[in-house]
Amino acid sequence: MEAVKQIIEQLEEAKAFIKRDTDSCYRIALILIDNCVELMLKAAIDRLLSRNDMHSRLNAQLRELFTPEQLKEKGIELQEVPSSRIKKIRRFFPPKIDYLQNNSFISVKRGNCLKHLHNYRNTSYHHNVQNRDTLYAITLLYYRLATFCLSKYRPKYLSSEGVKSEKYFLRYGIDKYWDLSNNGMNIIAESLSSDTVLQNQYFVSLLTKSVDAYIGRVNEALSFLIENTDTKDAKKHYKVASHYIVHSSHPDTTSNEYRKYKSHIGPTTLKSWSSETKKWKGCTDNEIVYLKYVQLEKAITPIVDAFEAMASDLDNAIQIQIDIARGK
Image 1: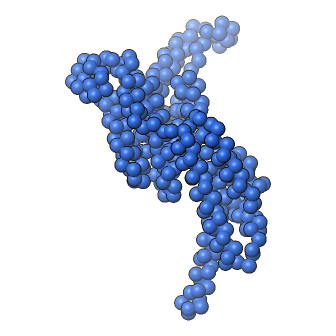
Image 2: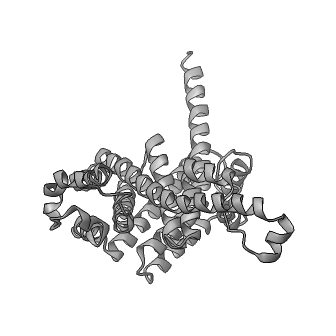
Image 3: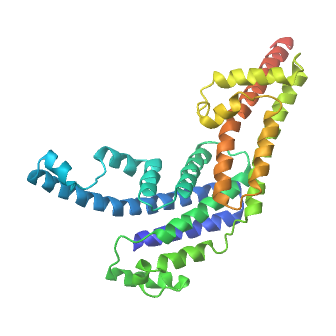
């Protein structure tokens, strides 16, 4: 019962932080949401793996009664998850999602969204997020997916001790604790998400704005390079940027998304990013739009980083020459 209260309270707090409308509050909300999702996924996995434990015990007994050849011939051995995989499932987020997808607890699309959102939470925790609109949109999307997980969440067990907590759930119209095992979690999830609607056109516009911000960063760095070097041909700067990427240790330079764009790094690259965002306007599913945005961002990030690194290197060289001229 306390586990249920903890998850609901954290989601309530996360929603309150989102409504405060500041970058720091979005970050705190992301942490709370991510923790809730992990707790709910863990509970679902515990339920599924308890069945796996039973299969393991039955298989052990069958192996004592029959030879491997007999088991194979009869086809009576039950499927079980290897212990090495169970360790990964319990320890890491992506294997949790994969396991739940394989057991039809969550769709492939929604599971992939959760993976990327979890990764975004990690990134925003360790690095500065430069686009505030994107931070808001992604935080709200993660919150709504967390309420979906809540609707599928089932308490491990409910005892008579739950009577003490019944007043807590009255705000959601639930006056008996055992209703939580029936439709109660759906009711709570709908209540929590009712005033956090993420309109599709608005969501698309925010992610498009994020891509435009990336384009602006490349153009700003490119303008600085052209203005402060003898090379006025933008194509040559793109070639240097490609060299930077190939010889960098950027995590996305080996991805399919990056390879798709690698051979096309040039003045038309930025236009291709804008063309991609225009296609999103015909998609009414926020989760699909977000997955498309993630794939495009993976292609964009190495290029943006390369141009900003080039501009930074040039700026440092200029500052050194200025210091030498001043006799420093």
